[in-house]
Image 1 (spheres, rainbow, N blue to C red):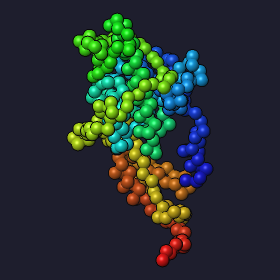
Image 2: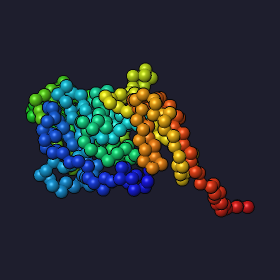
Image 3: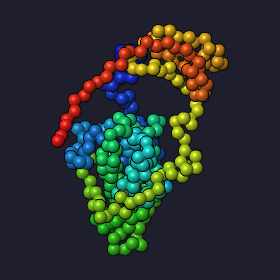
Image 4: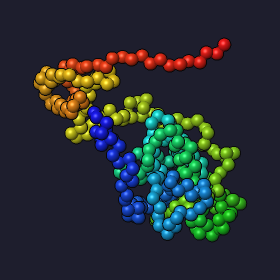
Length: 309
């Protein structure tokens, strides 16, 4: 494929902002509970500054919701790629919100549910997403304490949280659960100020070893990988590859491949693509295509080296 085509197909929108949705409408359609939204672009909890447009809900790329059953959903555009963030992010959230990690459901990379996120790369998720989620969880914890203060008739300063319960520090029998506090509530807040985060010595879950959230699905074969997904009309693509970089296609014979039922062959200059609903049959078609290539002459590259005596 020519360079201009590569740019057209892959990088044409690199400077185009993602599609914007109506954030107010998006949040309005959420279910009940306590929703805390946060954005990597603002980092307001680090700077301690309010967003520029304090009267508007800011653009956000993740949010958490304490539901009416006491469970916590965390929606993030980040994706699990084997690094274990579907468990580690739940651990830091659980520590700040004072719930068990088993009550945290990480919903990641679902484009129907999760706000836009620029991507998952460069080992940045733990470094930058962890503190954001901690801040949002700390914000949710304070909202729950304020609700409990009204219900229990006790100042917020006298309340503590533990295992999904808000209780009076001097009388643990005087308490109320998160699920009781969230029932019938629809509270949406943004992390606007630097929250009071826990110190490492207060962590119960962060830094501890846990089974990954998807361990059972993977060892039992229930986990779905990209190759396992079959959608209506899905086609598998196989590419006819040249023998060397810079090779030029001299001639091609497609007749044998074209006799394979269901095969589609696309060609543009030296680029040949085979499509079929079976990846194995698509690969067989590629092998059936006879190509003659003109390979460039190999040129050895002499690199200087440093000799240390």
